[in-house]
Length: 100
Image (tube, rainbow, N blue to C red; front, side, top):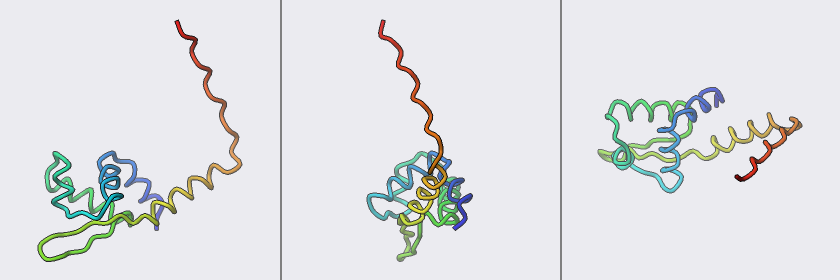
């Protein structure tokens, strides 16, 4: 797993929405497409980026392609972020604005 590919894939709102959809269940490409107002080539690009980052796996079943979340890759990326934050000094919270 290349973390740079994972973080690049996660940097896009549409791809994050696709991952949230797949968190619930595996879905066909058509079911995912129904959730967006995007062209087929644009969605295909998003699927390609997600597959390259190993965030989703795809399987052809008859005439449909089914996508499923690869949660272990998401977990590995989250652990990498937590490791980066270990021992880092915490920033103080911004003071609250007084009410008028």
